[in-house]
Image 1 (cartoon, protein in one colour):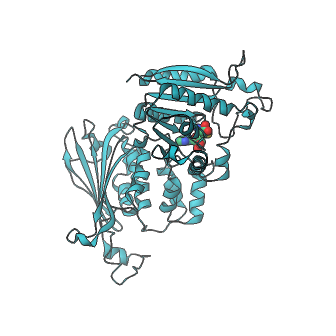
Image 2 (cartoon, rainbow, N blue to C red):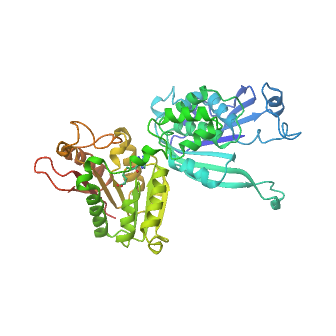
Image 3 (tube, rainbow, N blue to C red):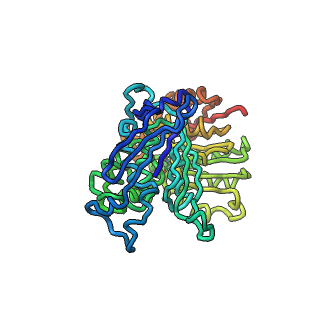
Length: 464
Ligand code: SAH
């Protein structure tokens, strides 16, 4: 079983320092189920590849304590364990690349967190489908290339196997790549070679730190990584996301209009104005990021002629509601061929967000922790980079005028922050400057002379 990792960031041979290996040497480690070897077939300043090869001893496996009996006589000797990427590979990664996995680099410490142009190839990995591979790796910012392997190349008529040749390309720190692989390889594999105990949760959460909690498929990953041990899965998900899992009642609650705003139906005002602004700019395509229950999408389909309309949200429950709403509230003729809904997260680069002329983020940014806004900025303004972006968010200064609100409270339980006009304008101004946009601001709702409007909108435009 092989994992090769290539760096193309000059000097690419720094990969040797990062992996704590001398590219000129063969490194050999013993594991309790076989051996791990690391070698560098290429080590040039422009390209350097490290191959981790795991040799599994299938007979040794059978003899080791707790070995699982195959369900046919030779199953225990003839199986995919020696070549298909599995939890054995994760053990090999931890053994051979332990420091790199934990983000340490003794020789060049600053390199450990530096994004590198990386490519990882797993020539044989089991997966339910190509879509699943994409759903797992694309939200983490990878370009995914995969092809299904034939069952037996000499006999094409036998059909396809359940294995893929997978290549991932991305620009990210090496330890991020290793952590993604450490968790996702065993999740994709159907078996796990050792007993799953509670310390597996700690391992999963440690290696999943910073990316698993916001991953749209986190429930699937956790379920498979812990091999469907219900109690462990539940505990892991609770620790992973203090906020409710997708589909929970509260997630739906979060989509509803904050009750304090109800009297003036501020949300309607907002959505109508955003729709108007979009119509004025006549984009050929638009994506509603954090589309929630699909209220803006409904307006876009009914009231505009924008040919391509997409909605994305981190909550699959919200998307289900959006789908129902759009099926009920929009004639089929107006939807057909125009609408796409998908699950994703705004904090991970995602190729599916590219190629739209306009994007809307209506009451979304305040649902993200403030330290995640830099990621959102990268995803929306640097990577997807539509020529028009509309962002709305509450104006905190106005909160004193909501009679039912306690001083200092936020309008909604899931809001992580609410900004004053100055704070919003400072953020938006900096983002615009950095990514080559012009930004203008507009108040939404009836303006108070002292506290301003209840909600605020920024319109970012980029020259073509
Ligand atoms: N734009 C909608 C919903 C606003 S509520 C409307 O105006 O009606 C905020 C939405 O942001 C929720 O649907 C929530 O699931 C979504 N959201 C929160 N964090 C997200 C993330 N990281 N990526 C994508 N969507 C997110």
